[in-house]
Image (cartoon, rainbow, N blue to C red; front, side, top):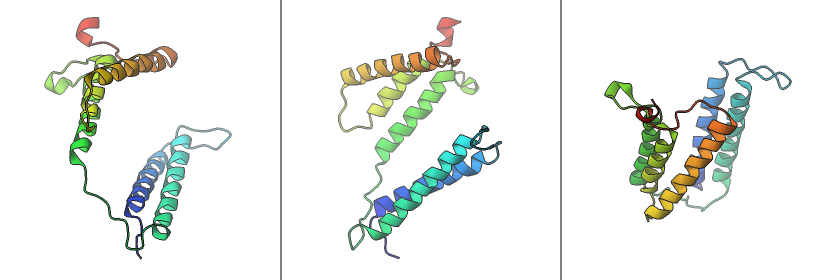
Length: 162
């Protein structure tokens, strides 16, 4: 079997594995049916659809592409580390880490930190653009999650709000 497009092959493989994992994880919840959906119905269907899309991409990668195979480039570890680090930092700042004595800084500070750290993954960095983006994301997230959906997020640092 000759893989003609390695990028699509491994991308499809990733979709298939993630979709299968979601479908498997959702199968432990009550699924129900289309008329009376349980809490596992949507993640199960989404996982199945994602896995099927991945399988289609894998099959296409075996058919279409360069005759000698399209090689994958080297991994970009620096951007990967920044993006993963930004997400971990966001989670830690949102609610805090009591084990190390880090208090919760809330949604706004977490989004600003997430945006600043993740933007370091780009080839160019413009602080003004990043701060504008972080402000828009903070306001949008506050309106969407706290006001419209009424989710209980800490918005500001716990040592300020009490």
